[in-house]
Image (cartoon, helix red, strand yellow):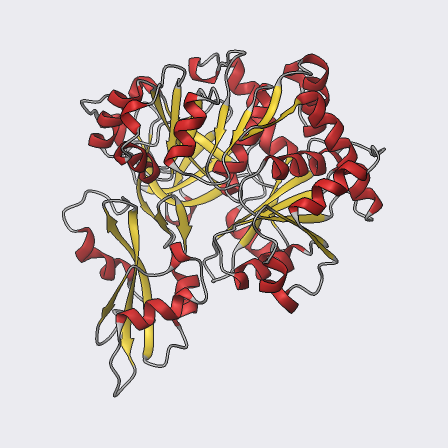
Length: 517
């Protein structure tokens, strides 16, 4: 089997263990794991999972920051078709509990620094048979024998990532081996320069592993047979060290984090000579930020557009379309990758023509299997013939470039994190002085968008904005908590009583040519 024929985690791990046994597979700080060691450790994990009674289709969860241990567990579980569910460590404990319970996971692996998580979860996860600290997990791996297992097939589920939900609860997008690896060969055959790899490259994993932009970069390194350099979380010093000392040649980052790098006093002194590509996503890049970044890093820049349900990137704005002087294409999300279909759909399902704004639909091998245990939600998002409705409004130009105009859904993207108004509104409801609340995204120079709550007070009361913010902070992750609160007499509604969020948003977006920042 050649590298072009590989289609599953088991394929890749076994292949690189044979072809590059001494090449580093995972690096975290001073700790390294070669491909030969990764194969051996993952086989022992398979044996340990089987001894715990787990098999294909069962779920295990990870609660912790990015870690080489996480990727070792994930890659191992995927070899035998046990589905890994990374839980966002920045979420609040009630949100952890919801996701863990929804998965039906019997085992929860805890990252370093999360030994107190069992106490925080207390009796909230009754279905979990065992929570293992990082130290316990490492000892368990060392003591487990190699497992005899039937490798998962290309269409078997291996990863479940949770996305914020329009109804207040997150949904688990189920991804297969083929979702994660299927486009790889098609893209490689297109011989795009930025999709080619040199043997001395390394990939930085700095975005959270509970996101496709974090776990997906670890998968990218594995598929190329190169090192994945893992940071527990994004910090400017961590990125600088990874580039200067860890040999990193490309990384993914959100524009807000890129801005933090440029503002850091150390930024101008780092040696960026090995850095080839900076991939950014979740928001367009401001032109001035691009100018500063190109001048500072000397690397080529690419914008990635995608979503969890499409296993990450489906469109790419390539380096040649990035001009520090600005050009019209830099307002686009780029062109579909080879193997990806796009269409713009209007009301009633009509396919729209060039330049016409409608909902963006996509079809490719990247499209998820579906939402976990949510057949109705899956049917609303996916068609029987494989198309996914993205919830983004946009148009295609004559050259096939995609331009995002607005979001059909109400999702807010702040610092690369997705926030749905419904979940924040649910957290605010119950406040003793709030009669009604609507949550919107407003422009923010640092984070792209900021979460704002617009509240109507109960009769005879007044609303203290700080009180609303504190109330929400007890129930949802910090990045979901409103940064500001406005108080009005009544929410604008249409004839059927639906809140007119666009009307609420309009004053804050006045003068901007699109309703996403």
